[in-house]
Length: 534
Image (cartoon, rainbow, N blue to C red; front, top):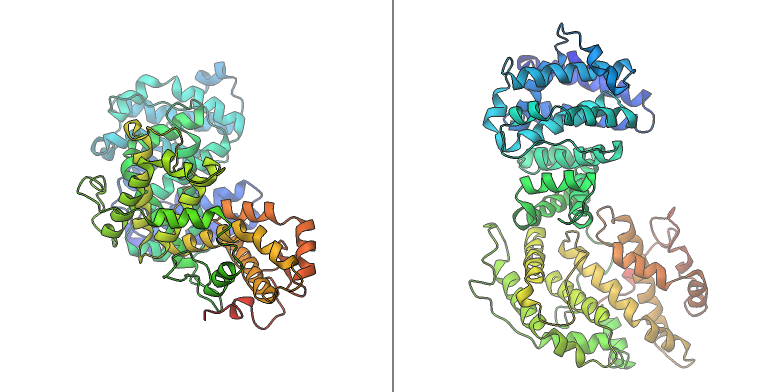
């Protein structure tokens, strides 16, 4: 039935979409566990048709290979698979079809015109198509190993087909690896270069949205998981794919921009009632003004390294030169001057990093690096910058960190946990981090019997707890992963019970209850309405 459904008859496009939708609905009703991914894969094919992106080389190569795959042929090739120990008729049928296609293409008995025009990506497109078939045909782990070994035995045929100087190798991947790599392929090929209509189509369906966002997330994780020296089958495949797509230096800075745009289409709420998530521009520390004044009045600011550290960082200036941002080729940057000027300031700081952190007695270099990162988050959080602007800043920092000539300091500092942030996320991250640093000082003030500011402190604590709930709910792209972990480590059950003694009736003990979307679901007003700017 699938063969009939995906037949590319353009003049009956509407009928195909209707039939395909019915088949997908039936598939979902009957699917179990991993087989449901097969249904989603069928949906992705439907998207290809619905969006009418037949202009893509990938689609055209896929279409022509699919025609060959559907043709059963008359060749009896069963005997040639006996030495592989293949008994499953579905696997034999699959290998039979693939053998006929590879042999025909290598001998030029059959042709795929698009393979000639896309020779730099032929191997990738061929793998994409094969991965799709492995998923849709429901082949299992053992089957995939046999198929991988068989394909690598056809090296000569593959090299003739892909018309490339590089060999086309099939690595021994497990089923989960194939799902992940296929997800990455789908994102970069089908969405990255898509126009705004494609993004709008995706935003109307949370399942599509999450699938493509996950593809990008897997790509970013792959860059961390698979450095060039890493040698395993998944990383070999991933690095080969990443290298074909211009590597980290030119591609990655723009990918997360697209992902953030996808997120914004689905998640319209960027603030919650009461205080906006933007801080006070005067002190640029993302702290609520009332809270900042409390810390200042009770001399908590003066007693913490972080405030002194931020103030020292603020003394560094920098005006960028043409060389500062010559790596940036994105001509649609909204805040290029501001981004480049900020990066020049950071360059000046990093040039004297050892000398800088020595000024702070007993400050651990790791903590100093964290403080620098969150200071940067605060600066970027006040710019009217796009996610792409922010990506470009961290791209410049990444390049700076890998140039050994600039790394003469004993202590190093860079951001290893950048997942692609927008300004709202940066402000929230810094707000929670700063609160956690100041918390021990706040806790000491709560113990003082005559402290008249307890109510104000408790209101802000509740506000941060509510913000934690929001960040946890919006952490689908791991934007808040570090802060959520720090928060959980700080507030054990014992700590929550202790805090309840000083801040009663504020629902603080519900903060880790995942069944509740808000801290106090029965309250008419949130604490954020009580903690207002004055």
